[in-house]
Image (cartoon, rainbow, N blue to C red; front, side, top):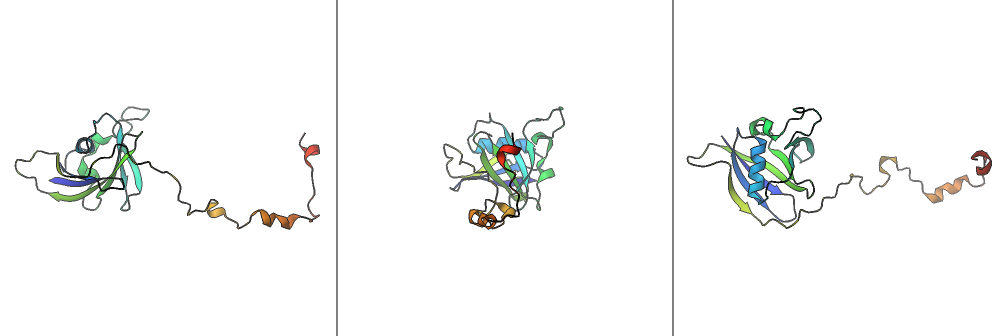
Length: 179
């Protein structure tokens, strides 16, 4: 069977490539197809990330084993496409070049029979021109514009006035207790 992917650059403009690849090919083969389809030279490190239906990043699958013990980390070459992606699990994130952080949303669009005479992987369709630089990523926590998060107590500087004139607190003084 042939897996047909739409690989979308995470950018403001619509830039994507449709790629056909055999289901028994590995994530490393898909990595090679993606960097070739987008015109990269393939000299940079990359990783795939499993994700949920709303593209929330989960587990990393690196190009190279970066563990302390050789063979401890499974790499792209260890995963046939069919072991990660199928009709129910159709999405995966691809990051190329961890300096520039080219980020792609990769979605399995179809699973079809092989075409006679076709050579896979194959770039089926190309839309949009690659920008000179990746868009800048802004990694920040989602705190809904609330700098205090869940610990907001609705107190501010004016609320501290409630302690003025209250003699029930003993003043330990700075000089005598902190020398």
